[in-house]
Amino acid sequence: MHDTTDTTPDIEVGEIAPNGLIVTAEVTLRDRSNVSVSKPTLDATLAMIRRRHHNRPPVIELAPIHAKDTVCFTPGRWHVTTTGLKLLDPSDKAPTTYQMEFHNFSIITPGEGSIAAKSSLSVVVAAAQSLANRNVEEFELTSALPGFRGLVLSPESFDDTVELSTVPELPPKPTTKPQTPSRLHRLITRAKRRWEATRPARSTKTRPRKPTTRPKIASPSIEWAKKAPIMLTIGAVVLVGLLILGLLQFAPSRETEPAAAPTWFTPAPTAEPADAELLTGYDKKLWELPADKTAALGWFKAGVAYVTPDSGELALNDTSTGDEIAKAKLDGPIKYTAEFTDGDTPAVAARTDKSVTAITADGKTQSWPVAKDQKLNVTGTTPMIKSKNGDIHALTVGEKDPVTVTSNPQFLPVSIDNRSLIQIESGKPRLVSVPFGETDDEASTITLTAPTDDATFERHISAGHGLAVAEWAVEGTNYIVVHSLTENGAITGATEASPTSQDWKVGRGLETAIIGDTAFNLTTGTITAQSTTGDFTTALGPTAITEAGAERTYYLNKHTYTDPDRVIGFTSEGIALVRGSNGVVTANEKGSTK
Image 1 (cartoon, helix red, strand yellow):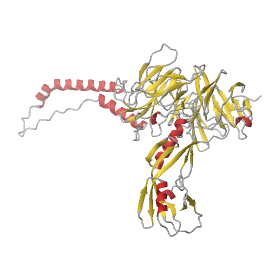
Image 2 (spheres, helix red, strand yellow):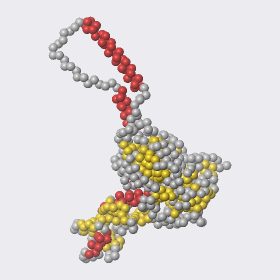
Image 3 (cartoon, rainbow, N blue to C red):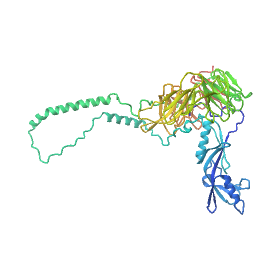
Image 4 (cartoon, helix red, strand yellow):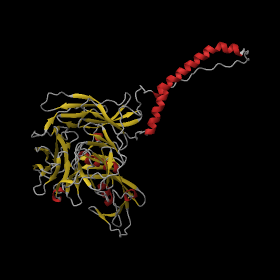
């Protein structure tokens, strides 16, 4: 994914009830004689049971496939009563009358209908997680199905409010694992191709059959005299050929680089192993915030944002000095936060059910009315609001109301950069930039540069912050390729794709973007790091981070670091924000406390 939406509940006011999604399923009922009957709903199944004659209150239990699934179900047995189901005590020895097995699961939103119908449970849970990621909101999965465990699905770290890969009409993600040749394989392939291109072709002439009669033996001296000039000529030609071949082998090749080692593909810089802590020498404390102000706090490029415990306002403090920049009133509990830019000025935004409130790094405050069902997307530099009917609005600092944006209906809206709507063409490496507001600029088409002449475009992944991210296939290998939107789709960086290279995520501080095990500079689109310790999970300023349990590895300036402290912010100027075990947040930089 690919925006600055904060998907962790750093800033909250009061208790927020998560959105409710209801899991339903078709039911197969099996009795003790192994006769099965299927019903479309649980209610229809229970109604059928109640209509049947039983000598004792009927008892149901989960089929083994659900009883063993302790993640989604709690094993148990239930009496079927006239009004519902009553959980039996484990010591109750009443025999089981029926087993229930569920299939063709669906998820429905109260009042809106189904969003994932007749699929496996894992598919509908994944659909709900995707919905939570896209909307950057928590969703609670509940169900009347007996034994179903309620699940609260929080947005995964740094996922966008809109996942391009889940937008209808976009090409599906590759279902097969991309071929990712090793470096040794690439070197061998390159050497073989260079040899094939330079070695002399083998003769395909058929040799004449030997005569059946023995030839006359000529005098050796006469034969040598006749053949000497020819043999000398052949020897000279062979010698010259060998010299040319040697020069070709050692001379730089003029051929186009093969896809195994392409000229557009620059390997990530090698990071030194982690042998030091990130905060070694960070002994100069700049400022600190007490624990009562940090329960709801987050770091952004614009500064440190938190909710004041007394008035419930959104406050923004300067990262360097700790001084307050501005405060803004909120009209309700914050659902999530995001960061964006107003021109070149960074800003932080907080979404409630009724509005979006923003504070810029230079102290401007603004609030826009936003309906509860409108979706906020901050994939680009400017917040974008999308309504259910497809209408698009931009949240522009200085404009009291959201600005109406007219889109090209032949393309899919992805993000807003400054005052231009970025849209992609499904299935093709093309985008359009559509200006809006008071501007004389005209709409332009951007065609992404192909890595090679025979490269195949696979899919769009993201677009925003002046970059477009796409997946290409080159000679059987898939690559994640980053293109510049300001340089007409030119390639700025690329990395080999993997099954986990699915979503483009922009880290806190708007400096680093991550996808799979690769980190990119958000300004230049070039590779800054490649992980050897698993996929990157987040980024803080210029630092890309992997996590294994409670242990983090920080990739920064071609080095890796560990640190026992919980770093929640790290600027390119070298300021680190740390949350202590006592809840106090401190800002430190290298130097002595004296």
